[in-house]
Image (cartoon, rainbow, N blue to C red; front, side):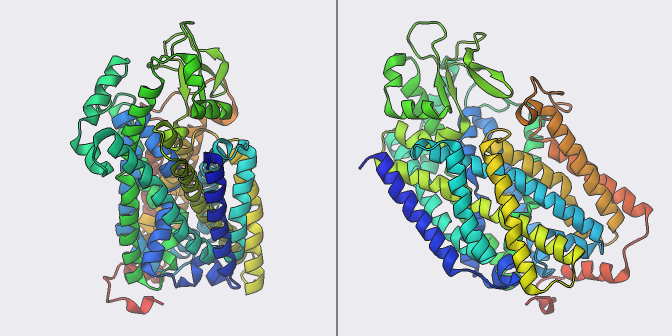
Length: 580
């Protein structure tokens, strides 16, 4: 069977599975809708957390970034992995002890302030909308290449599937669907990694092939010959300060992501939350330790396939022709010699932050434009693997994107229905009303997700990095100080969140004006050497300093709040009464 037939078959079967799980997991109360009834076993919750965590950015874009940037691309791998460990060990068990539904719920009750709750809810919606844009873009890319649909049609199909199981089943439907999606995405990711490792090194274990073979020496030599820096050399594309800032922003942003934190509320008790964190880390590690190997193999294969080959011969390759139709791959013959040249520099000039395929950039010899987001998806085709492997990777990419998108929709829905509607505007709302509002809140969220997926402000990992920066500068300090600083009060938390979110949002807008607003060029290039992807770490510091200063200049929180803060930090076994 052809790739297209296999893709329709595997994607169709996986979608049918997700819809079936969503239908059988439908809920009728808010506890089931927001926290899956707090009855999810640790292993299943670990798989669901891993799927929620490993978004389209992890599956599609992370290896692409490492492939293009080499050593410097590992900032995403280090930041996201370190951030999950930070969340699992430092915050999650204490938040689970607090027995709330959402992050804004914790913030509002901890600081005894509806203003703080409202600000945290708005931040949650804002962060989730930006994050979901990356997921929907990933969905559109897969559909446009493998199912011969344009990106807009692919995004709308993805939105429809997510809407079904998220609206019917809420967190319960999303959780069990994500567990199934993890199985799909990890199998889809590992098979090409194993196959390429064996083909290029003779060792079928990607991690060992990456570490023990001479593949890194070969790619370093190729990179040097083509005018790039060595693949394994640090700080070739980004200065050290920016690398550290981006890694830090991703790490603390991870610990402040509302859709990941809410997963720890779905377990029966604190002990189960800790075990689910362990399982999630194990499941995440399977993909994250494979990504650097797959990135290097993909880079080696792409250069070997395209560079110094006749351009007409290259364009007749099936996968090249199909990816060119999507606009995510373009080849131009700048010097008219009929030979494809890969070199350092941009193949095309940019217009509004995007490549202008009618205007080759004649300042450098590079003749190939390759979107970072297609590197993983194109790898099985470049390596000439079996059609079902190519189709399986497409199904895996969709699983990664849809699993995270569904978690984000739950986070947005709960922020609107539970934190704003019920806890602020209508505390007397009945169970049925709250559930209805939760479901209705998903409609505008889905519409916004579809629009941002069709018109995204950057490639997948870059969009996601912005969301992490906002989580780092807005929510993380309020959560951290809420747990560990009994003197922190509402005035400090609110001032810190306002300063952190405002600074980070403004700086991202100024530095990414072409991508966000279609400007000819950014208003500022960076902030003392720190790029838009890393600016969240500066916003976080400003948030922390502001919160600490303001809280010390204003009255302390009520004594009963300080006692609650002390109680949630009591070691396991001494506070079992807090568990349900």
